[in-house]
Image: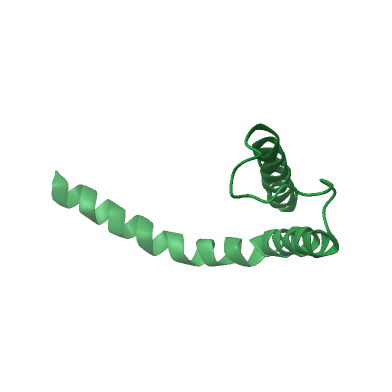
Length: 88
């Protein structure tokens, strides 16, 4: 699950980078300022690193989510069974 979260974060960052690069190439007269070079600045590197670390930390909390789901699902299943019985 951690790999999925980190992979999605990387995919979003790369796709946004490609999108804005193509935008500045095809629409140079737009409101976006044309950058001198397309290499990310230090602040962008820090943002990408923190977003990657955040997605890694968010994905590692899956064990606690699984424990919560095990506690919550049995009552929800019983409610669903009751609703099915009433519907018949």
